[in-house]
Image: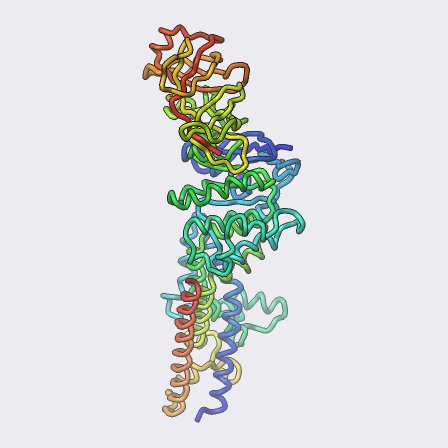
Length: 226
Length: 360
């Protein structure tokens, strides 16, 4: 049976993934839109930076994050100067780390959905009297919903499975920053294979169901289109 | 009431520098080779391209663009029909048609949905998705959608170019009646002389990013410097009225403005009394005396208005006026016959017309 601390870890993990995805969809939409439409000369630089978490060992990302938000880092000093609580080893710090870590998983599906959509439907909507926000919600969003679904699920699942970054900047404080993947690691370290099995199996089934939902819905969207 | 535009615009190496004024109602065709800037001009008028400072656009007294004023696309009351229908695939035909209708700035203006749906024959399709329609049907929906947004100016960018002949024949009658009943000015881009002559009353001829000529269709067509007049397909347009529909031997008889009769293959008119004839310059020959015993039926009395210098192929264009009118006819004859006949300005001649094409 799962321990109470495991239930709390699961809760923290879900909350972290949910908040991270929400932030990423909000920030990722304008970024992906800009990347899909800009003729900026150094666009490739931005694209490479966004994709970096795909290839970088999470510990490297976590290490730099820790340096930045630690008490002597630029962000840490700034937080101290305005009298805010330090970010390191806090849930807020975890959210910031996750946002960077899962950025490409949200931005890339959105960017490709926006590129595929093209400018024509928006130009037509504009000639029909729709303003910018109106165009986004009545044309862009419905026509790129499968891109949004993919982005949401990938961002969510990727954040759920994160380990290295969390370990570096979140520590492993039960009840505050201990997430599922680290709880599993702890159980294995303590040779408590029973609890590790429980949690791993739960994560496995959950992830599988999530992906099943994506592929199932994506197919349904296609059927609706024709 | 008029539409005036002065557009300076640079897009890469292409420079558009166009200015024109056309009447604020009826159909104006924008004609020119592909790549001459027709579409770019139309896009700039809609606000989809950003012109350089100094550009102005005003439509029937409403300023869309000026030094100190810039209306965005969605603030301009413009309807735009592209070559590609561009229907919204997530909406049914009804949703597409109503998209602009729901957003129009003055709720009481413009045609009613039922009226447009009936005119374009779209009743059967309202609950279908765009992907299930044919190309011609989609373009009809796109036209209806633009009309229902109650625009002050309707822009059409080669709406028939991407369609096959069958769909084209299916849409042209709609466009025809649309242009009569739309009660809104239309700018129609085309490179098909047939479409231009059939639909338009005014013509803007473009070339190399500039407006070469603009004005009333028949005037512009017959101007010697228009690219149409210079090409092998030079033609002129005559306005006629119906004298007798069921003439002899499957012919109909029309009257020109000079009061002479013209015989054409029998026409079925739907209560129209005016008919325009398109006459290719190479189908017109000139005689100094009225020919007798000729198989050619249509012979009109004309007076030479202008003789265009011969081209390098030994052909030359002669502009003649129908007796006592301003109606211009173009004749392409050989330089040799022009010299032999001693054609000179104001000379009275007879024009033999070998073939006419009926247009709207």
